[in-house]
Length: 356
Image (cartoon, rainbow, N blue to C red):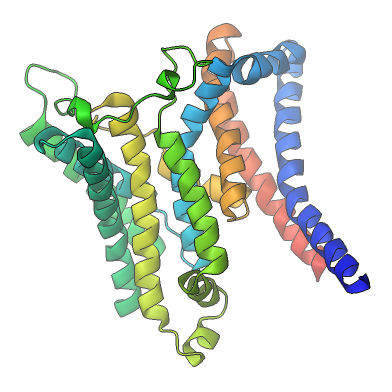
């Protein structure tokens, strides 16, 4: 009984120690925003009231937060998977771009019923994103090339490649916007407003959010309870020990980057199949890079990533509403998000020193 109580106390202390830096950083972010507004002659209470009204005043508003958070859940999980294997995947932006384009092509050209076409589009996106992640993985495993440089370069290649394909081959006829023709009706993810009666019909939340929730649960089980998750974590922490135990770190690096890219590709699915219903050039507002912040704030834990994505989804939605309602520049939030990450990194470093 004493041992069980002791273990519970140790786990509780560890949980509080892990949660303290993110909570302090988040509170500091909102406090800093209030101070800046007060110094500029604005009422901070209006700011905080608008945050509540924009995010939590109704199911419609909260559904908007979940909509903005959905792609960030995917990219946050992708980065977290890479982190667990000691890999820094900066290429989520490129991976979700090529994945979105692949999903759009399948959704436009393949004639199948909904129960078949939707899975085909999702699989095509995951294969494209996974392939884009595999290339840096192979370069690192075989030649020792750093994945940060490779993934950054792959982002540029993906952006240029998809832009060329849209402008030169697949652009929708008669349109000035850089976009493909719309995908078929049977390739579209239905909105949850048709199922959840408390959501209004025009709410943008769709079943890609449910897919994100499933991914969070699968990622947790994968990392916690499977042999592959154990190998990935061991290679990330101690590659020499993993190799001594019969694990090939090079193989793990390759499939780890592939898995990270495949998950990142689902962010493209959320846009093409759940929102725009076509590939639109430069559709991502930096989801791949924000995913790094989401993974960092979520401590690379799947459920932590989910919570952090909700926070950043709230910030994205609130930024638009505050700019419209209070005439506060959206740049304030962008600066604040950057300072939030800097504060988190500093607090994390301080907590490690305290542990030592």
